[in-house]
Length: 160
Image 1 (cartoon, helix red, strand yellow):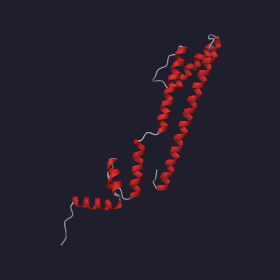
Image 2: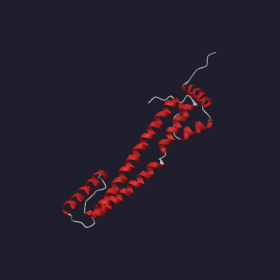
Image 3: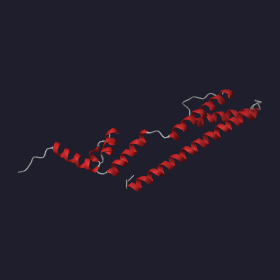
Image 4: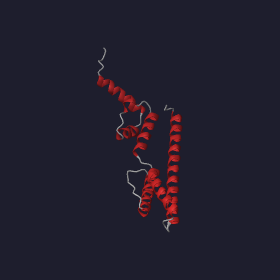
């Protein structure tokens, strides 16, 4: 006697096969992350998916610290621009703001208009150095994360 095979019974058989290939904890984690488990064939594949999903959800501590430092730099730029009577907008890039400030300081240096010129120049140099160091560090970290990600993928046999 031949039993009829319906799409429901095929899905049940597939789920039962997946259930045996994946631990209960892994299945629960995948469901919690909203991952469709029908295409997952191994515990290792499931672990990779879980890792990718959780990394995408979690902001890195470094990025939060960088944002805070950029906010501080932006505030310092606004204060210096105010002292130099330079108009800056929050829509402008920090590089543009720094360029405007540098140009104003150059005009003051040519005309020798301000007795606080050395203080203003020192503040500008400090802000610029801090910003360049921060962005350089940020790009170095991003590059290191890319290298680490590529290494993990190579070790796990995932193609880019």
